[in-house]
Amino acid sequence: MDRLRVASAFLQQLVLPDDCCGCGTAGPTLCGRCREALSPVPAGRTVGGVPVTSALVYDGVVRDVVVAVKNEGRTSVARPLATALRAAVESAAGERDGLLLVPMPATRRSAVERGYDPLRLLLRRARLPHHDLLRLVRSSGDQVRLGREARFTNVAQGMRARRDLSGARVLLVDDVVTTGATLGEAARAVRAAGGVVVGAATLAATPLRTPGAGSP
Image (cartoon, rainbow, N blue to C red):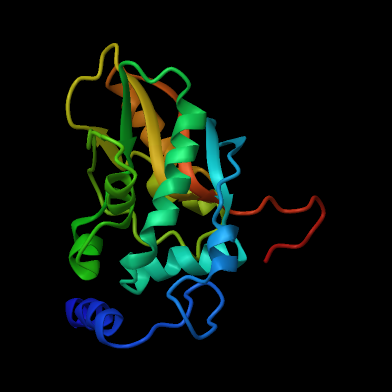
């Protein structure tokens, strides 16, 4: 059923006019105003003990377009997201000679259900060579409804390097960073295999909460 849903979305893009997946207005799949909202402005912060550079803030138009690509099969709008991801990588990487870009491992189930892997799709569109050096050693389940501490517990000891990484310099890559739990676990797995984590780059980061504000 999930494969049929994705295939239906692709066919709909081909034969029916689309509304903008950023604002919903009739017209192109991504209107000019929403495309402008995807212009990268790389910014850094430390999450999960890892310095992370993110190109966009995961809110509003950015969130809606990312969801459209990840969950609705609307891969025709992946190009501006790929451009933003590349900007984050270039900002985080500095000197890239010998640096390995390592994306977060995806579950086989998610790839099968979608029919593609969104993060690797963006990396290909951005023409960023990457290395799948991490694998999941246990299922961590969905993180979406978990609180901060629960997210860290959920992913702990859940990854392992596919080979010895002694001397390797690694830049971790993900689509959206929230608490940094997944990136923190990936960094642990890389270091356990002898690698050096220089940081991480993500397409987007969830907005920082205002001190004293209640939980959403």
